[in-house]
Length: 322
Ligand SMILES: [Zn+2]
Image (cartoon, rainbow, N blue to C red):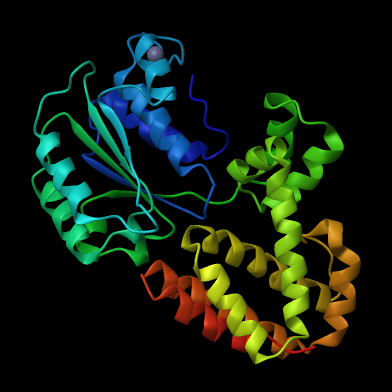
């Protein structure tokens, strides 16, 4: 049974590929952080190597090894400190030509491909151009546009979209036994990203960090240039955490757009609706729109390997002043 929640069209497409024996050599799964790209890739790796009739069974030795990250033919490759390096792609290239050890297919899941250096991307391109048999590459990225077109054109692209809030809430209650009230809040805050909701339901630090980041942003609104630049410098020290932070800010400023237009339908930060209303009166619609654009532009630049600190400094200076 496929374990993936939602993304039914993508699961159906992969099922059909398996059933017809026409599996692509490379897939690119795109979508915002924690939307389910990695889960879908792992589930597909299970379906490819499952020993049971009903693939993926989730129970057999292959399925459980893949779930626990101990299957020798299924590897997850991730960047270190926000960079995928050429050495990692070279190692993949050398290893991919060897036959699978236990399964039918070797599956390489390369996460956040936008973090690849130009050399690493070009090295991977060589593997994509001459894919060894029995090898499937599963790339993930926030969006296809952030990657080299030559890489994208050799992959089948599956763009995963946020799930409906109700779907996230139901899964939290049914699968992860979260109580209804908490499930509802987390589902709203998740913006349709089930992975975020599940992690937050199991780890209070996630919500505490969100709280902290929102409070810091409120403070920055009344602070000057020096404090803002200091903040940019401080958060750029941990580049891994920056996408989630910008995602949070974006959700806040999008909510402000909604609140300013008098609508509360579709607001993400439901637990802070009062603050949203007060702030919505403080800024003009134009200011809010401009800052949403500035945030989007920063996300765009960072996905294309722009310097984290410089990008954040520019962003902090365009944050409206109270
Ligand atoms: Zn199985």
